Length: 89
Image 1 (cartoon, rainbow, N blue to C red):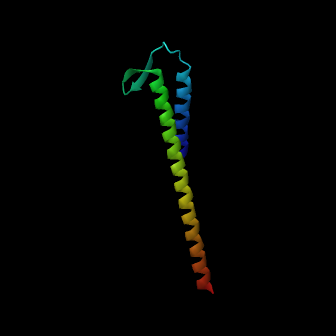
Image 2 (image 1 turned 90 degrees about the horizontal axis):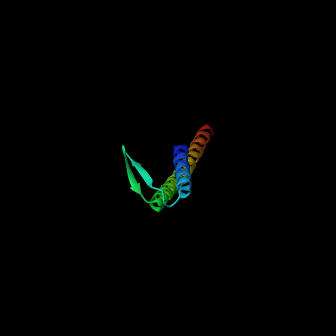
């Protein structure tokens, strides 16, 4: 799941970089479903940067959640080992 968000984040960053290279007098269009909307260059760069930031925050949230769950799993395994050893003794 994380790698998909990383790919989306990378695509947003690359799109923002690509749009920033477009001359100011050129039209910039945004794809919405099956149509295209005329937008400003700055608005599109801002949108892509915002999307990249959102993906980054989601990735960080998933990483924190993964670490939390791993700690819980390790604690549960440790408790089970202690219970088995106590039962053998």
